[in-house]
Length: 315
Ligand SMILES: CCCCCCC/C=C/C(=O)SCCNC(=O)CCNC(=O)[C@H](O)C(C)(C)COP(=O)(O)OP(=O)(O)OC[C@H]1O[C@@H](n2cnc3c(N)ncnc32)[C@H](O)[C@@H]1OP(=O)(O)O
Image (cartoon, rainbow, N blue to C red; front, side, top):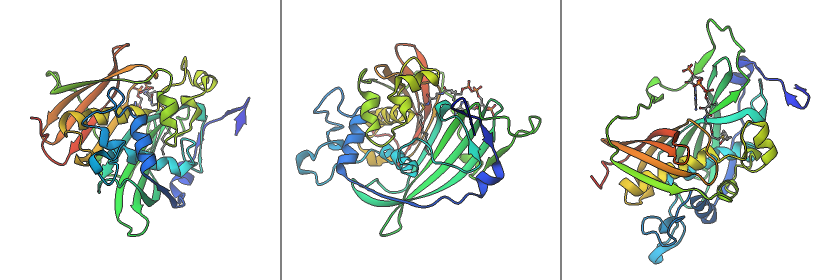
């Protein structure tokens, strides 16, 4: 339903939860993997970066370009042909008010540098927050031939202006996954174990990142950004997450992208292309907790953790 060109929000949880998503098949190759790495800043400060060249180049005869674990975060884009969010019957909202709230990625096998894969998709959560609806979409991706499961993405989408569909004294809240997978991040008071600083490109960062398959105009069209409440197009949340995960991999895994088991991030504030991202990291066993700030505004924009397969090597 639309008035004055804006969609009037409505949520029917029964219809949304009953929906069976079609499976989505697609393939990618090394060019996609390298383009993604460039889009999240790999080798951005040094074209021969010792810890990152293998992400974009067949270094010293290496047979395959290595995929960052966050490359997997692109897979859910295929559910919607890169329009940002898959259509869920029963949920109608103003697309210009949609923001990415959180992302959780589980990596079961190192992400191959080229593959034919299949997405299985479901609604994993739906919550009425009054001023917003939170929708959680879970995408499990498997190799097409063997059926081997590669990874799972849980994308949390914050639909501003679409809440209030349930009784406010007992707001609707539905979740399919175990409570211990819901992570509360509390940033330690102690000095961080490592700090990594990265410059995003003022003119190109979002325009480059979108070529990896997220063509939501919020990140490229000034008019759309303004309607959404921003002075200019903002960076994709998953681009910021890619910068943060790179910071962890460079600081604690000697640049080895296969060292990561899972990744969580909550987007706290929008980022403008050109801002400097400062990622502070705290090691707790195999878990690296992090917080990323936009240096110019001294504001936290992202926080979360990366779980590694082993205790970080540099400690
Ligand atoms: C299938 C894949 C689709 C992927 C989506 C693709 C589209 C991509 C778009 C983008 O990349 S947008 C850019 C990245 N995202 C952002 O820049 C968002 C940054 N964050 C914010 O602006 C704010 O945090 C917010 C999301 C607007 C929320 O702030 P607000 O002040 O309105 O919330 P609160 O009053 O603090 O909390 C209300 C309620 O919501 C919960 N909550 C708050 N923030 C988040 C969050 N980031 N993710 C999930 N949930 C959030 C919070 O806990 C409160 O709930 P209760 O505690 O009351 O139960």
